[in-house]
Structures are given as C-alpha cells and as structure tokens.
Length: 251
Image (tube, rainbow, N blue to C red; front, side, top):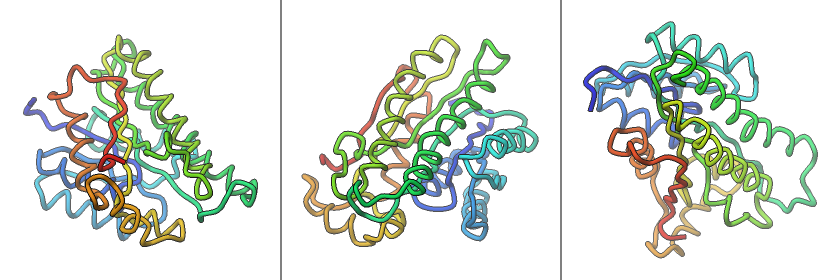
C-alpha cells in the first residue's frame, strides 16, 4: 500500500457504518473527513477515535441534500488535507415502517433528497475532483446501498428500497463512466446490521429479530460492513469496479 497518507471523505460518519469505517481506516493512518448533520457530539467522538487510532480527522458539517453544503464539505477537506482520494458515500435516512399508501409527500421528498440526490451530489463532486482528465489523481468511490434495493422492503420501506435501487444503478453507470478517468466505483449492500437506523424507523429490534432468520443466523455488525468498504477502497481491490457487494449473512 502507498505509504502516503490517504484522504477519505465519509458522509454520515457520526455513527453506525460510517463511524466504524472511519475507525478502521484510522488504523491505516488515513486522514478522514467526518461528515455529519446534527450530531456534533457524536461526530466529535468519531474524530477523537480516529485520532486515537493513528489517523487524522476534520469535522465537516453539512446536509448532503444541499448542493452548497456538499461543495463546502469537499472544499474544507481539501483545505485541511490538500486533496481527496476517496469517498464513502454513506449518509442515508429511513422513515417509520409503513406501506406506501400511508406515506406523505414530505416523507418521500426527503427520502429521495437525501438518499438519491445527496448520493449523486457527493459522487459528482468526488468525480470532479478525482478524475484524471480534470487534474485529479484518480481515486475510489464506495456507495453504501442496501439489500433492500433487491428485496423491495414491502409494507416497511419501499421508498428507502427504491432510493437504494437508484444508488445501485448510479454505481454501475458511474463505474463505466469514471473507469477510464482513474476512478473506481463500487457499492456495498448491507443487510440486517445492528445500527441506530432501525430505531429511527421505529423498529429498534428489527436487526436482531430478522437477523436470526438469515442463513448465518444473526444480525451483522457495523464493523463487518466497514471491513468490506475498506477492502474496496484498498489497492487489493484494484481490479474491482462496478461491483455490488452484498454483506447480508446470506439473506
């Protein structure tokens, strides 16, 4: 691996998979941009963990659904560390469990603003700064999708599932677009992972209950998804692009 310190922006890094990825990268001495929206204290904990494990960190507040905030995020990262080498496109939301017929327009709009528009804005900004033909050094984008994109999440989160389907499609197309420009693009699709996102959907025990029904027989952990992300970011995955990697316990 290149001994030069890499610079990785992780959106939604204050908790869950984002935090686990930041901490795992820190063990490699990576400089991490820790993006968050509201949870400053939690984001600071992530940054402190990164620094304690040998990495460097900068806090980057900003809503990924806000174009100006996304541009500012990347600008601040480059001011702090000189460049960006990789993006972990992780920020996402879920709403309370319900069938589509009960979802209001405000919920749907926010879901797609964050999970689709936000993912596209972040990927676009990374492409502008990392592409060889735009003066960049090349790089890697790892999108955090979900197994929901192929399962559909009926009666629970069909809006969330659809948003992640868009992320899958973006991953495939952008990998073909950016491959000749020195940027690899892949996605991980976590399954039933024990993170706070289930509580925000009104089902804090969902991962534990449904995880027991997977072939492996348990829910996954954020660290296990982080391991897959870090591998995709690494030179060990140098010939991998356009891949959708399921981390689901066989679900």
